[in-house]
Amino acid sequence: MKTRLIAFALILGIAVGGGIAIAGIYLGMSLKESRKPQRAVSVRGLAEREVDADLAVWPITFSETSNDLSDLQKQISEKKKIVTGFLSEAGFLPSDISFSAPRIIDRHAREYGEVSQKLEYRYLGKTTVTLRSTNVPLVIKTMELSGNLIGKGVVLDAENWQNPTEYFFKGLNKIKPEMIEEATKNARAAGEKFAADSGSKLGEIRSATQGLFEINERDRNTPQKKQVRVVTSVEYSLIDD
Image 1 (tube, rainbow, N blue to C red):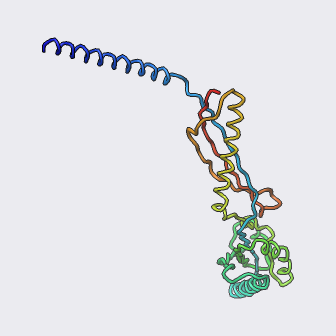
Image 2: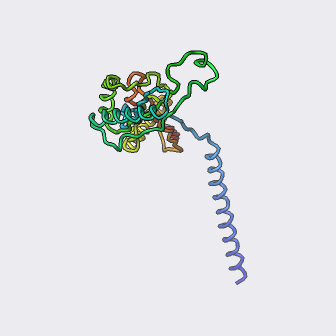
């Protein structure tokens, strides 16, 4: 009985020792593998698309002068009706048109410039009728006919640099998925080229970052044309070929 117990203990000890030895071997191999440099490549993929603006904002600013504030207000109201009628005839809805409060300047109260000059009219009034429409081609066409307003006595502000016509693109969400996919494909193509040049294969994605979408004018002469741009950054692992 005692002999059997000793034999059993001996076998158990050998088995435990063997297991520890094997575990040590595997641990050593794992440590060796973990100490190998992890090869990777970071690449970027670009996607660009030219689109048409889908919203236009046209501020129509005009001026009136008078020596009487009541008369000035009356003139401004009459010219607002002329501008509104012009836009309505062009095909725009009342909901597309809004008005700003008139800005009245008392030129006799100024402390510089025109004070020393003899002014024919004391009060200068400026107001803006703003057209906001998703029918961008119609807005552009109507702007080309804005000279008709001058013929109706509306003195348009030619130096309206503070309120220029603006064009926007609001349909970004519709093209986002396709552009992200395109940028990711371009990034992978760049990664595969790098891997091939270095004698490796492209592995799995280790990390990816989507850049911000940028919407800019294509050029100064055609602000209604927009260029949408996004860059995706992707890091791939490299596998020895």
